[in-house]
Length: 509
Ligand SMILES: [Zn+2]
Image (spheres, protein in one colour):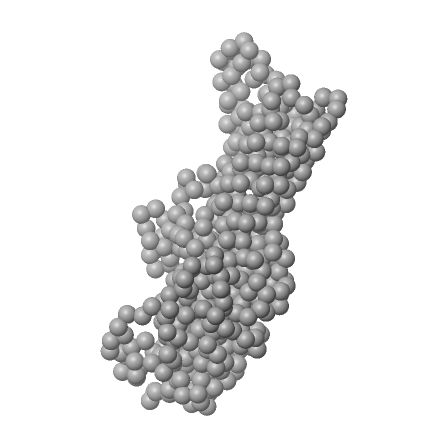
């Protein structure tokens, strides 16, 4: 077990002063700083990422409760988690051991099974299968470890037993088990508690106490434990399953912002009690909600959900990922046509730039190529700046902005009349941009369902370009309007033409 030391025992001039909560403050891990800072809700500020092993980190994400189809709220949460994990792996060179827990026993699954007269396992299997298909369609990497509650009931039972023995949990008359939040003096670590008041439940000792084990109800699936028959409560699942694989310490623990309280608070409380430690998860990562205009979060209960296939019928997975990259992972993201149009146009700017850059290098009539040191300096500046912003709480939005500025600068040079020919910096910049975007999980591919061969599109686009230039010279409005019609019709078959270039270019939407 690695040692942890109170944050106040170390000097960090660039981290502002922490709130001195008694027993609830964030403890700085003892180990190897990786040079990155991440926001932590316990410290309420960015804290340095310190790993026990300089190159290895563990990451657990709370997974879905598989009772229904996933929606865009889930998509944005898991795409953003995927981006953060890719940054750790690709930019910071950390070997990440990822795990996710799937809740396949739950009130909602049991209800759905009753409604559809099927077994709860069938419901869970069906929606979990669909969940992974949805995640794959968004280019989300599957966690290395996927754990299901129904496979780990014994692990969970042993976990609860130890907490009961430590005196931090109690068995009630009906055979349920509750965690005693008053006995655990760090409750409220993740979210400061208001006055708890009186418990609403007759079996609870204190209002904030939560179930570790739910007593059996007729007609519901159950398992036998030494204190009585029943099934695991929701919060205990993650703690017990994570501990089985990662032991008494966890580097990153992620989930939607709605899980911060009570789910993650409870996970931390019961895990610290089980492991007899003062800090279990070192870094809590909470993803902001996806909202609809004027609405709160997208959720089944509000009946305002958009399914993942529904979104993908209108936009590419790359466009959705770009929207996620352009927003701060911690804050709410408002899903709208404007957001998707902006994301699509940014994505197209990069795609057009890459095509133009390779065209510029391969089709340039200038005899001698030359270096452009100023442009190489700009590239180096952006490389350094991007590492800096990513190290500051994964600031992908600034990173995308820096790349766009580099594109503008390079475009200006490529389009300059009678300019020198600079193939080396242009190629290096194109390669760097491709590299960063693919490291973020963008595919940058042309869609495979397009049945029109690329060389045919090339021919048509070049022909239209020649006709359009002639029409512009002759101020032939009729011919210009015909060119516009061709452009719009091409757009309808997902071919977007860029007219602003010296040489025409196109990308598939
Ligand atoms: Zn969880």
